[in-house]
Length: 271
Image 1 (cartoon, one colour):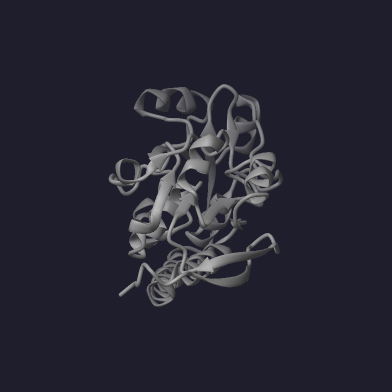
Image 2 (cartoon, rainbow, N blue to C red; image 1 turned 60 degrees about the vertical axis):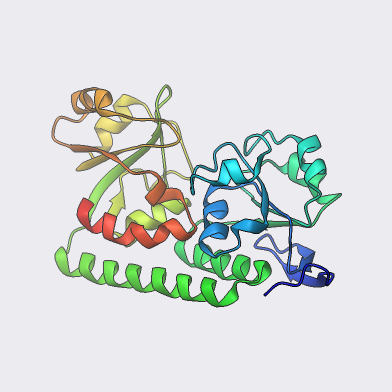
């Protein structure tokens, strides 16, 4: 049981950017700037310590009603954050913006994740759990997710000797895909798919002609960040008549926290 009158002790930790951060332990007033990490904190049982979240922190549903909404991931309201008097801010290299993080780090302990593959996501889960005072739960969660992906990869290898090629779209006008060096690409590979745009890196723009030339067997239209829907299926079918096209749950491919518990089973269904 936490004793509120006992002051937090300083804990010196290293984040995934290699930055040394002095964090009060256990933290009592956490601002989370990343939706997947907000959900993780709640699932680890420390949601009552979360005092600030972004407008995109939609899981769990009570996150945005229980905590103060401090803006978006790339346009935070510094005055709102100051009013919350956080003793820990948790962000991410890619989802947040450098100048904003630097401004916050000048006044508060800021711990940053940097994730491009599953092992880094599991490492983040364990480290955030440790910092937040929920190490045992975090370690168990990471082990559960790791085991589910190990089973997924074994099944994918046994199912076929030739992985299925996929083009994974995250945006429209212009078309943008997830390519090599992304968390999405790593999960695609673990699910037994090959990336049709593996020769490119990060999130490149691609043309309809490039898509036709790549000739993927499957086209995944992600539910986020662009809200692809059924009305877009014909558009892509016209470009790649032979491809199987599907609207997929983008959260299960790109949220690198506790939502990963559901990802392996979902990927098995996609296969």
